[in-house]
Each structure stands twice: as C-alpha cells, then as structure tokens.
Length: 213
Image 1 (spheres, rainbow, N blue to C red):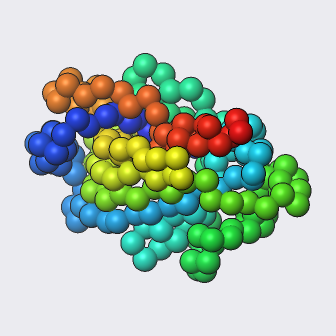
Image 2: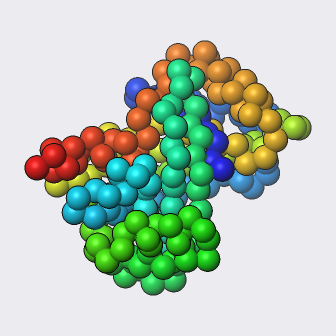
Image 3: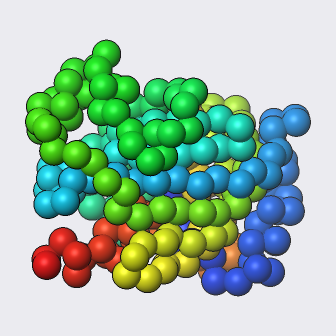
C-alpha cells in the first residue's frame, strides 16, 4: 500500500527553503539526494472504464528506468493531505509501452488479472501525461523511513494543462503517525496547505469534458 502526504507549494522560494530545511537534514540518509526528470502517460479506454472502477494505469519513465504502475482503491484525501492507495509496480524494458501498453504486464497478480477481465478487448489510449522534475531524499526518524519529494512541472491533456508544484512525503516503513507528525511540522513551518488533488485527479479533471461527450 502507498501511504503519502501531499502539500501544495506556492512558489520557487518556498520549494528551495524546504529542500535546504535543517529539520529534514537532521534525519537525512547519506547520499540519498537525487534530482530526476520524470514523465508519465496515463491510460484508459474510450469510455473511461478504468476511471469508473477507480483504477489508474500508468507508465512512467524515471531517469533511465521505465515502470508500469497499477493503482486502485484510492480513497478520498483527508483534511491532512493523506493519500492511501493499493499499488503494484512492474519494471518495463520496452519504451513502446508509452504508446501501447499491454495489460498483461500485471498478469502475475490477482489485481492484474481483474484488470484484464475489466478491459476485455477494449483498447487502451493515453488520456493525459505528466512531465515534472523531482528532487528527492530519504529521511530516517529512528522509527520511520520516508521519501521526501519536491515535484515541479505540468499535467498535459488535449483539453489543457495543470500545474504540478508539490511536496510529497511517502512512508517507506515505520509508523503512519510519525509520517503525519513530520508532515504537520513542515506544513506549520512553511504555511503549507494540503494538496487535495493527486496528479491523476488533475489529469482526470482536464479530461472531464471528454468523458461526458
């Protein structure tokens, strides 16, 4: 399960201050800092059958790595900006997946087989993309390990674009309460507001008119 906090970042200075924050540095794992360009394509059928089943199908390139991801049971974000989702990640060698992904990528899991049954013979198409730069580091509080990411870029769909400017704190291991404590401390220090929309939700909002057509 993916468990993470998302906060909206209002400007570049705010982002720079968080990246250099002393509190994060006090818990930072050595040599964990990285800056990487990421692009992703999200897929669905012409009638948005995956959206109707609350399933997200994503192919993402992270530097030189390509990863296929299936997410589901994305509950509504709560007031703290906490997201909880089930997730499967499978490495992919062929970048052609960005044009025509095969649902059989996930066939080794029960959820993947359910996906193939839901899709039947309906072809997948790209409904939107995300392009962003991510700066990230790992922190260890002694009881909890998290990845802290700063994302800056865009969601791009035929109908328009939406800004990506956010802080993500993802729980790798340990206590959810510790994750929330760290997030709340950062939010108070930098006057951060919870980000109510995931990148996927922003993309779906852009395609809403197409879905209703």
